[in-house]
Length: 97
Image 1 (cartoon, rainbow, N blue to C red):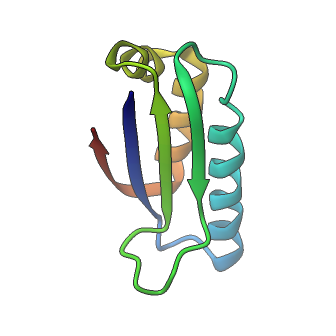
Image 2 (cartoon, helix red, strand yellow):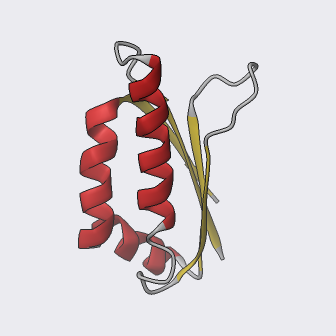
């Protein structure tokens, strides 16, 4: 099993309402990929962070293999979500194990 973790910072120039909407949309769009991509076991997006957090959004996803993770990265449904994420975030960090 492979775990894929990504953290994002939402663009600071967005209003509070726009930042909330962006987080909700990212969560909905990413979690909507559950059951649509071969080898994706689970996907959870956390937007309710503690003040001690350095990022605004966390994705924790699990895949049955490294090949499944690589397939997810190229999957058209994932790429569509990535387009939106890139439009409302300015920094990302990832960790796979």
